[in-house]
Length: 312
Image (cartoon, rainbow, N blue to C red; front, side):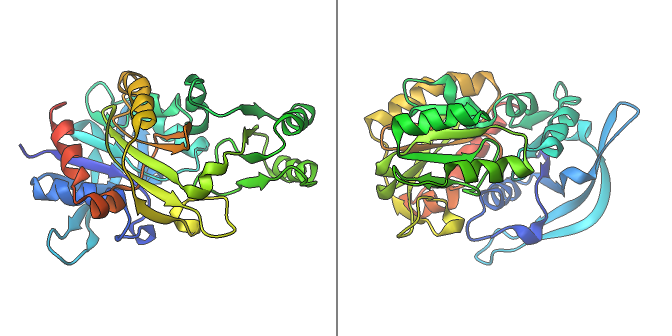
């Protein structure tokens, strides 16, 4: 079947074709003869109860040369699309949340992946707290005394913004670090949002495992190893991708969260596992499928479309 697919994502000049997951998803859609459109969240307009976007036809090569370009501009009624893919990167701010409210207006007529209500109600660092058997000791608070008490109890902790992304603003405070109060002052000077504080997991030095799930089922994983002297394993801050396989704990975590993801319409997700702990569930714009494909000689984008087309 040929489908009309609108991809809500960031400007194309900001993506890395050697690593971007949306590029591979769009490329596979083109191979399946789906008609592709690209628009940014700022192009959305709700007029007289109809949701429109100023979009461009998406031109993409499906040969050895990687290329993705914008074609002719057009206005599309998103109700006329078969599928809308929400693939813009965080921050998960009011702009992001507003986009979910707008897309929810058409969710009874157009298949939206991931479901906008599910995305809005599943902040990535909050969603993991629903699975307490797998989550490290965690505090979410703006209260300095509570944070100090948590730090005193566990001594070695990670402090990060509750709605941050990509490793930005993540700090590792060792037992004798004296910067906690100053750090909290810094965070609260530009944000009213709570912080998330977690017991430091030393196994992160051996890697942070990113597992991709499609419709609640694991389909592949990579291990992201932080650079020397770095506590963050994110690829764009120097993390190194390594081949890995799912172990018994990983599969148990995936089994435990799969039904919840499906029930919330979270079709395409990525979870982060350090040691035996689940630390994050990425529901906004999961990445990692190009790296998994290279190590495992697989094509996750084919699985993505095979399972998604079943829902049409």
